[in-house]
Length: 393
Image (cartoon, rainbow, N blue to C red; front, top):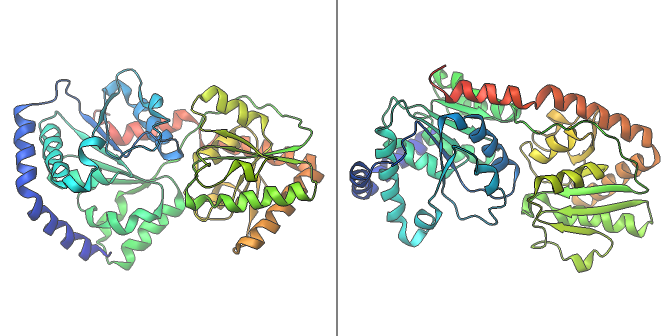
């Protein structure tokens, strides 16, 4: 969808839903928020993943403003809900009311309700972290209310371009995504005044004290969701081949991967399942040597940042923003192949290299820690987000 098509589509939608939105607006006026706030944070859910963890970090950075977190999508596991349940951070989970296509008019109604609450707030700021409901609400807000968007992947750009007239600031978590947005603007002849609204802020992660481990076998781990983009069948193929070759490597999975992999087919691998306890997850990360990713596309996964901070070697397909943070033979190893069979072969060769050269493994891990400290520190992260979300600076 181009810019003009997006704007036209939005105008037609606003006309069709108007009666339901007005009804919701009236309800919101009659029944205001019991605990007023000036900061409204729209997120899809609290599922396990890099983006939800990042969203929880943002909420923590401005917890002194007593923000209201609004969830809109049905969760798959809600595994990171505890990260949002912080002092002074309030949660409004609307997914049971608005995430139902059969009763979509209820979704329209709540757009009006939230618009009424936000419009009546003192100096409100609205923030959306890759949340469709955020885009649906902002056309109903007062024009002077700042609306800040966070983007992790370019898969949203074809949709979100229709709303850029109403977005005050677009934050990108990778430089490649910022470049993609500016390129999209040029291709659509978007006025140059919009270019200055596109910013870049690094994500942040916990950085522990560096501690090198010595394992009898190379401990290779996958941490993440079992989504199609992760191409776990390629990871599994690498594990199976290395087991057959009797190479000294052991493979583990952390996350909801049983929906795409059958543990019975990989008896030589360890399946941890979903690990929501942070201490347990950190113990697994610390005990590992390598994070292996065979994804088709990525933003910058939080797990890459985390494993860099632990001084582990990231071996990944060279997709999207990964090469911005992982430099081949400097702080990790990149798989350049495109075809799946070739990815398997190259992945095996790179893991074999780490087995044969433990000094290289150590050097890559140490360099990763140095980069993580420079880029992913929590103090810088909070300072940058408070700059854009707090109007009393």
